Length: 472
Image (cartoon, rainbow, N blue to C red; front, side, top):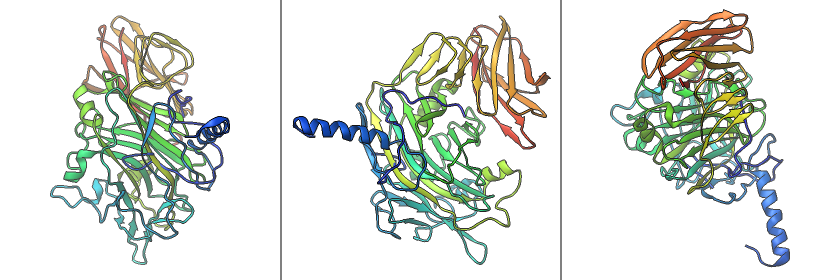
């Protein structure tokens, strides 16, 4: 998957094996004197820096203090006694099969099958510093599971600052997992009073989703209106990416809401401190972005069974008859951090090779990987993922060429695009020696091309994230 080092002022640090647990909360997070005291403080800073981005292992770990410029807003290490529930002053249990509001969608709007409970059969602390959410099937074939939210809904990035929501968790690892759907996500505060009947306009940040026990994960931004700028219900998404070891060890999943430049805001998603996907404000209208991003959020953990996402990926109706019961998602820690300004920002100029991360990049990218999803001017490189390399090349003043080179030979590649947001076009691309191409005409300087792909890989069909290109 595309990745990059964390920004210098980001609260991500290298991982090490741990001794106590800390995590980011749904909606969100977490003085000595004299020569000996100074030395002790330095040692604590080093140890703390090493413990925040966690990868692998099964022991709980404590969260490090945030680095300079960041403050801890909320955190929970789930240190309760074995078999106990959560602190209800901090956590809200969703119950049943949907919000109990007039007009709220049943089965949480996704078609998932489980009934959410507050029973310690489904949601409990294990006595070793972990929260466990466990779906269980009874003798009659009915499923119960857990879905919890932070009581707080005010986790927000201030204008000129940033918000980070993070958790260290281990995905469920069932023997037969077709239909499992673990998730760690956040929803705009305005959803709660009306049972999310104002979705997707109030915004949703899917920080970690996996389906069917694939040991993968996807990140997604939902906004606007149904079938609108964010292409909901699918959203603007990374699609499923490789996540090696994510079912057998703890890994840290995070989103940063970056408002350091309020005219060029950005969402950045990370796995173990490495950037995996980003969404920039200019990919949608300003009004849509502000309604979805510039406000408070609450965080959610749940493990669903069946529903639209597992069904879409498998091309079937889940769960399977042989699905395993009782494989839990384990959360080591949850935390929310905030800055009031400083890091991130805007990079202006030309990048040749390498990877551009953080902020907004304006100029020409040649080679390497652009993680922001937006290219201004002509490009001879583009976006690289584990599945493909894609980009747009300026041919002349009125024409550009979209290209897609799959890592694994594809039986077909379709491209979908809009010019300046109007009249979606859909084409089966032409295969030229393993690189698929499609020409676009009638462009002018400043024309914005939004494009994405549907492609075959070893039989199944996949959809790519959405990208934009501006004709120079």
